Length: 528
Image (cartoon, rainbow, N blue to C red; front, side, top):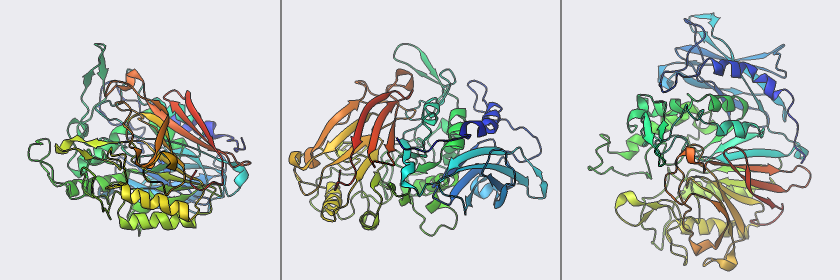
């Protein structure tokens, strides 16, 4: 495998690890991380980087009070002759969060950075610096690309459990030294309160760290913000964020289970006093944009959207979809025309255009929902579907029509190296889609890989819909529903692209990093 080594990354994190040690929560308490210097701004929630390119990257931080964000970068962990960049003033308007874009970085190199927070009235008064590191995208094919993906964090009431050590899966992922981490949605469960304890099937008790904002479903902006802060109470996640850049998308639980635009919550759901899902989604989107370094949702960003394409050098382009914001209402999915579908017309045309433009060897389509797995929406009291497939193995209907249009486009434009990655269904599996098995046949074969959850309830394998001819080549899932993380079934996936051969290898892994399934794909084929 031609993948560049990483000198010094582990040692550069000593500062971050030492800072994390000071942030450990008392068992069972929801107190915010402790700060090292009273009277000075402190970055107790760690640092993150996101949407890193060959010469730039976004750095994120949250302060405990008004502060000026300052970022220093260096080619070495000693920070001799650092380059300083002044970022935004952090205040209550963004919940004291902010990002600074780093420009003019060298391609394919390890960047060491530290964030200082300065008193706005006295710039000489700064808090303890928080350090991190990341690699910029390499323009050299021979360097290869390695990244991980998963989703679904703190779901079904299974939160940060101090008895188990918290979100340990992030340590297993960090050991693989990925270039970036693709989070495929459900970064929070805004609709899932976290209580102090939950009963386990064996008679034991699961204990959670709790906070006020996680004690009920999120409705207000403050409650949505508190949901994002909750996960950052975990030291494993903060360490991972300081080491690995993220590519983040969202799905339903950032707002509410199975939501769609225009939805009105039933009066019988007394958990919600705000019944307009559009109002909730606007608040959730604002908090989402505040708590992740995401290029197209930064203040002043022209696009103002989640979907985007991230160029990862000559080997890889990542097409990040938003299958939530532009969809039509959930329904049985049996309509014979569906121009809006799950992506909306504008996003679909964007995706087709960008796929046709791409010259990367591999084109990963990062979907927040699967294609051929049936995901029901039981909340409506009708046989509605949440994702694309509706269980009818015949010709495309409903949202399948839009996917059929896209697959036909890939075939007729001779677009090579497409690969679908997703999470959402709380198990891991590999599906191969083949026209010879399908009702709709005007497409080239392709793979879809599913991973997750990171820390949530695990569920049995979803039923397959035969419209696009999926064959489930591998699956690992429990037979019972909502198995706690203590029972296993927590997963992430790895994609490794060899710089010499261009081969792409997918590995589906368990929580501790154990490889469950491996599939190697050859470059240059239409579809895949």
